[in-house]
Length: 293
View (tube, rainbow, N blue to C red):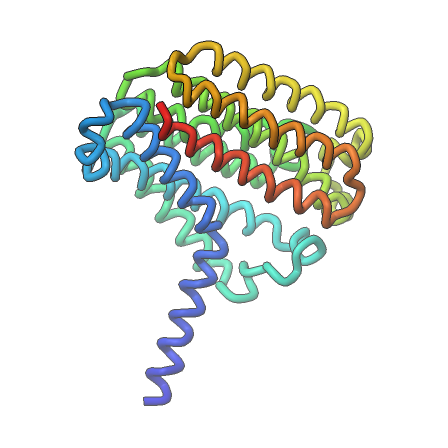
């Protein structure tokens, strides 16, 4: 009886560790984004239940989530030493889960995600394959290069929205605009995370923008990106006829301005961590605005 309880506890610990490793809340946001995109931007609102229960949409979203989860896994696999400096309390690879188990799960997730995408469309399967390879390159090499790593993650974030337009091929212009919004905001967040992780990255020879340029000059780039984000939201508001959605785009400018003001004053790891979390809330608000279309 005691052995069974211990075995069950180990399984529970491994499962909860896997959820942490794959950033489960982030995966839920990815799935939510794709479902809202399909329900509110692709099909007529009158058939929302049809999209909600669609096996095709479930497969599409599952394939994207699996590729994203594999990306988080391989990123932590390569970042163990850096994470022991930046976030020692959150290290899972080699500490809670064995490295070979982590790599096995990563491989299974990638293969399953690619095959699920290919079962829907060769274009989706090819995009998933590209994303899987790109995420591996990012974790292994690209993230240690200035800007290239940040750009890679941002592109892949945008692609998680774009793939819905690729598959359904409806209302593509608005979906592309949301994908661009996700890309720019993700790029801003990735650079903020580099500011947050400056100490650990520098210790292992990473050449991120805050290390190469310094915090001040990196902030100047952030201001340009945030100005571009504001311009994008104004442009999106100008192109939609629905008054509620138009107002939502204008309202999204307010947290972006607040974020910019906080960024200008930020100079500690805690403040950069807060800004990184705040980016997620802006992203979520942007995703939820789809409901108003």
